[in-house]
Length: 129
Image (cartoon, rainbow, N blue to C red; front, top):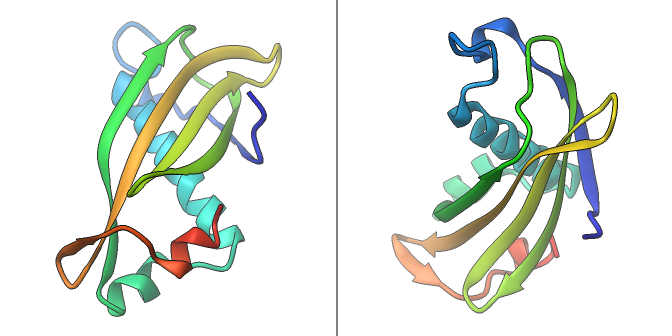
């Protein structure tokens, strides 16, 4: 898959469980952070959207775990967005940086509401694609 955005980070000790691997929920945090960086990189502010009555929320999150990350592992989170009907779909993957090994991949479906109502098209979000 061809990704259009990526960011790098490092695993912190407190993100790991007793098995010494990243707790599964933290991969979702990593991916959310990457989506927020992508949106900011495109000049869109979630806070400004919210103040305008527009909220973007995750409607569905499907993740496949492949290889665990461990403390101090550097990783790269990559994404590619697309529009599918009313959904803004983010295809995301996390790779261990030292060997480019796939750690997990996900499809994150987001929807937008304006004034509390589901909306299909928002120019502010369509510009992200």
